[in-house]
Length: 304
Image (tube, rainbow, N blue to C red; front, side, top):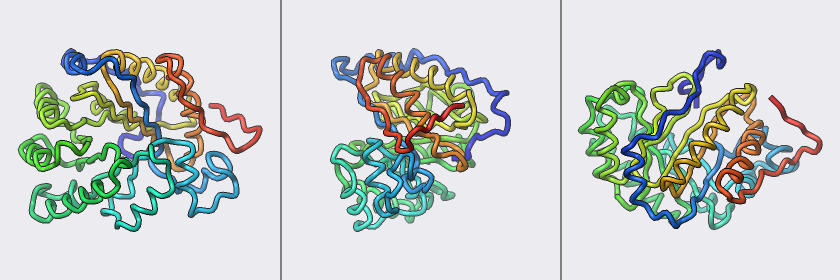
């Protein structure tokens, strides 16, 4: 995800925003007796750089997803931006992962990047996508719609029509990108809209667009898209900040944490180091026992 990437990471203020009172109020209605669940993952499984590090060195490409499913319990599938997968493709995916595994599929751009996201063609494509989600049943996690950079707040009614059409029992997260959505009172307006339809607002932590980073949750789901640069020490500082924020949110009532890490193409293999720094801190902070990722390259010592 190139959205919000910068050339100079040293100039960015990576502080996380405070948890809003409205978010605290929404979370206070949740069942505090339920322990939080964590869904960690990468934005894909097909990177050959994962061989010999995240995957055994002799893993054939046709078994990459199977190897990925032994490391992570969830994945952000960006490939579906190009269209809804066919049934045989979906069946192939689900056959390679554990029953508890979750696919977070991106809503195709043929829907989200139309001039009218609710026109007849968009509705047909949305129904096709929903049929795919229904087909994979419990393997479906939270799907997510990334709205076009030019989708502005003056299209609020279009957003409302879009979420109204989406089935309320089918989990959906929405990422808004245009700066107009993050100015003044409008943030509360779209948060109330998403809350009323049980839609999750994506929390996007990307260096060059700190306005899209917020803590305006609408239910007990936290969906984070994290853009880092795993060659830079800021990731360690940001991990600490996120662990503390996740701890606070879970204490307030968050039940599911979806955390997908993006990174530049030239060092994707360092995602292992990122999560193996983050997971022990989550375990300590929340008293859970999430397993570390397996490092298949003996003697490798990845440091910043």
